[in-house]
Length: 528
Ligand SMILES: Cc1cc2nc3c(=O)[nH]c(=O)nc-3n(C[C@H](O)[C@H](O)[C@H](O)COP(=O)(O)OP(=O)(O)OC[C@H]3O[C@@H](n4cnc5c(N)ncnc54)[C@H](O)[C@@H]3O)c2cc1C
Ligand SMILES: *[C@@H]1O[C@H](CO)[C@@H](O)[C@H](O)[C@H]1NC(C)=O
Image (cartoon, rainbow, N blue to C red; front, side):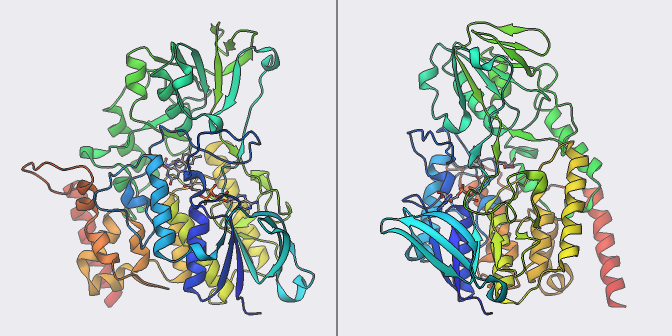
C-alpha cells in the first residue's frame, strides 16, 4: 500500500529531519511532540522534572563536535557562529530550521504519544495506530507509517553501590544537574568517564571546596582543538581516514593527544585502547586537576554515611553530593519491546533503523544510534533512507539477512568494547546508508566532473553537505559548503585581521603522493 500519512513522534533533532524528509517525498507527516517547543534535549530549562523521563542539559554544555560537522546537510550554521556552540544557543538553530522548511505547521505540540501499536488491519496494510493525549484530550489515529524519534537519552541510568541508602548526602543524575551555584564550598564526587562526567566535574570544581571524579576504567580525553589548532573532528571524519588501518589512525590521534597532556600524571589513563572505549571531549579537565580543584579517583567500592570508599581503599569523608554521569538506558514506553527492546543487547534494529522482524517496512526508528561524532547528520541520513523505503524506492533485505547483519555488528562491538554498546564511527555508517539511497558521492564520476570537489569529498572533512551532491533532493549550496569548510570555521573565531589565514594541510606530503599515485593508477585501471 502506498504510504501517505506518516506519524513522526518527537520534534528533536531526529524528528525535525524526519518531518522534512517526509515533506520532500510528498507524504503527509503529523508530528507529535509532548513539549511546547522543537529541539528536544536542546531546549534548556531550569527546573528539574523528577520523573526521570526527560533528558535535560546542564547550562555549561558546549557542543562536542564542530559546526561544520554538526549541521544538517542542507542547512549550515551562520558564518559568524563559533565552531563549538554553547548548548544554550543551539536551540535557536533547530527553531530556525523548523521555520525555514515550514515544519512547524505539521507539529502538534503538548501532545504526548501514549500508545503505538499495529492497526487492526496491519497484516494486510502495514498501518499503525497511534494514541495521543493533547490539549483536546485523548485520541487515536491510523497512519500508513511511523518514525519514532524520541531519542536515546530519556531514561537516566543510576548505578547502586553497597551502603548507598545510608549515605546522608545528596545523590543525583547529571540529567538533573543544571548549574554549579549550589555547590559553593561543598565536596562533590562526580561518577563517570564520559563527556557529561567531565563537563559536570569541571563545572562544579569552579565553585566547590573540592571536586572528585571517579572512573572505573579511566578515559580518553579528547580536546576540541586538534592538529594545528583546528577543530579535531575536521581531521577525524574524513572518508580517506577510514581506509587506513585502525592502529594507524589510533597512533596519529594518540601522538597528538600526548603532546597536550600527560594522562598518567593526571590519573586519567584509560585501561582500554582509543576507539575501543568511550571518550571525553574536554578542554579544561587537565587544568582543573593541575590547580588542585579536581582530582581523579578509581571506582567506588561502597558508600559510608558521610562519604565513599574507593576500590583502592582510599576514601572521602564529609562528601556533600554525588553526581552520577553514568549515561542513559533506551526506553520507549509507548511501544512493545518486540519492536524496540529496552535492553541494548536485545535491540534488533537493522542498521539501527528498522525493526528486523516487522512484516511491513513501515516502522522506522530515527536517532537510535550513538556515534563518535555529530548526531544531526547521522539521524538525517537515517530519515532519508527510511522515507525512501516507505516510498518503495529502496527495499530491505530479507529478515534472515537483516538478523544476520544485526548479530554480526553486535558481536563486533561487544568484542571491541568488552560490553554491549552502540558506538560507531559516523562516516562509514553514514556512507553505508547514503549508498542505499544513492546519496554517497561516487568518487570516480565526481572526479571526472569536478576533480577538486572530488578530492575535497574524499580527503577533506566529510561534511554533511557531501550527501547533497547526488541522490534524492540535492542541494545547490552543497558544493560551496564543502569548498569553504575552513573559511567558515575561521569566520566564527576571527574578528581581527592577522597576516596568515590558510587552511591546514592535514596529511604528510609523502602520504599524499602515495595516494595520488594510487588514484591515477585506479583511474587508469577503471578506464581500460
Ligand atoms: C549531555 C549531552 C550532551 C550532548 N552533546 C552533543 C553534542 O555536542 N553534539 C551532538 O551531536 N550530540 C550531542 N548529544 C546527543 C543529542 O542527544 C543528540 O545529538 C540529539 O540531540 C538527539 O536528538 P533526538 O531528536 O534523537 O532526541 P531528543 O532530543 O531527546 O528529542 C526527542 C523528542 O521526543 C519527544 N518525546 C519523547 N517522548 C515522547 C512522547 N511519548 N510523545 C511525544 N513526544 C515525545 C521529546 O519531548 C523530545 O522533544 C548530547 C546529549 C547529551 C545528553
Ligand atoms: C558528543 O556527546 C554525545 C552525548 O554524550 C555523544 O553521543 C557523542 O559521541 C559525542 N561526540 C563526540 C565527538 O565525542
